[in-house]
Figure (cartoon, one colour):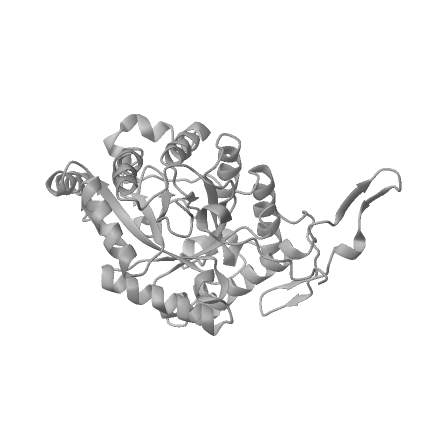
Length: 386
């Protein structure tokens, strides 16, 4: 089955799971969240399920925004890029996509970090670039004031510039810039290193990068979008748009908006993969899954809500939903396990076999890079001579 016709599946890893009460279900788990083997084991499980990629969440505040300063939720987070680098050495095929916060990180640093991850993973790196609306993150970094939620345009423009700088820096070394000719004493061809000379409202970057061009040319860029400004940003700047539809019809509508935005930006409609986000509670059936969610809600003292749709049911039920949404127009899904590793295993050991039987998912990895898994071509270097 070719990557172009296979459903794309990703898993979003965050703490003990996406339900804030997840850590309570397995007390021993709480002591392992900062153990690197915890993250390696999760990624290996996802790889056993032949998933395209895993994403690693990141933030610059101890807890999620909705959790505030509560002391009964998971607090603390490891650096996503460093976790991905650790996982890279202990996995073989699965894509690794850390999250970076555009307002609080320099695109030069991000570009070199992700390029390095692409080199050490031999072409399996991506990056999710996100905005920040949490005042605590701005207080911790201390460089800017939080943006106005009534005027998101400036924040989207900053994310777009952040991505553009990174892309130019990845291209600032041509693929054959390294000569390594001992006889002549030339290590690099300076004519194949390029200034990017980016000037924007937030960044002024000359280049070139300090890191040779990544194996994928440009690691895929992911953007999470919830509304039309975000869809335009994803269509203009991303390789993968993560979206949060409510149902199949909404999924088709949003996918159309993202692809139209890509065309408007001068890109082919198929240059952007559209993955729908879903929080999943997987059990033998809907009643069991709903009962588990209710137990977690009681333990947490509040009803779980999410920016993404929430699914409760069996792996087969989830598979039928994914196929329906896929038929409506999305390319795949990023699933958020409510409880780790429980719901992750429901995905890899229940959902994946169902989709394979339906002929909708790979039975083996065919490529070795993240772009290959996603069916994305390796981009031509913008600075290379014709």
